[in-house]
Length: 334
Image (cartoon, rainbow, N blue to C red; front, top):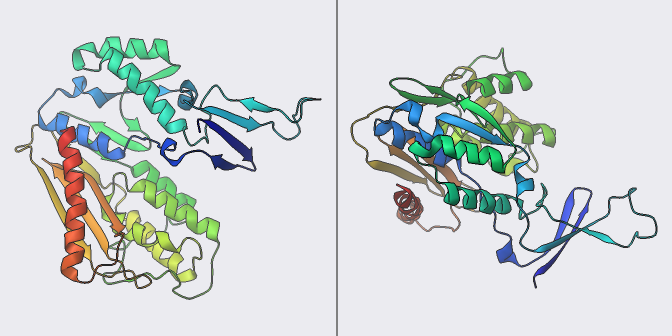
């Protein structure tokens, strides 16, 4: 069935489409870090790096079109007189559609393949992009999707210091005392840990903000992923644990990742481990891994395993398998 009907009412979408059509593709922050590390390691001139300049495509999703026929109801209160039963056919992949990210990816990928993006064609590439899309030339890159990029003669440093400071101010933690770690070692966070319930929206805002911060802060990845499962019924204890992470950030606002130019050794090294049966609710273990390329880490993760393992060794094998899959993917890119 190639025809798809979407009903957009009250910001909810009722989707009638085949599951395989609902495949979205998005650029991972790990790709940015991987490119930064690879370029600086090989001693490329920072002024010639692909990622040393930025382009911002305005209304990016609107440049892509859905491959299927998509219809939406008329907006309530704005129906055409005498044609209230009719629907609109979309010619652009609007924000909110399941296909929108993939439609934009297909559009920009086709343009990249047509133009190329090697260093000696960078100027031509930027010119072609500006002709094809409504773009703002950001020039020498120092800020990218909330990530501060400091480029120097010895390498590249990325952090989110400005974002951390805004985060602390937003949640009233700017004047709190800092702590030495984001979570007390050995702490187990249950979904229903007890205690009085707190504002769910406020708690979700803290957790969501912390998750975005993990783009450059692997040191809070484990603690942040541990408090995600309690977002449906957060208690006062959950809130205190989340605020401890903020207090840790208070003393580490300038932490980030440094990629040294011309660093010795370009091997991709991975470290992985598991925490057996950490979740007391379903007894599933937690997998953690971090990948380092030359001088800096490029990708990391901390997430619950999909199955219940019967021993510590089995949990570690599961973690190693997950890490190996990531390594194979990264090897293909390199």
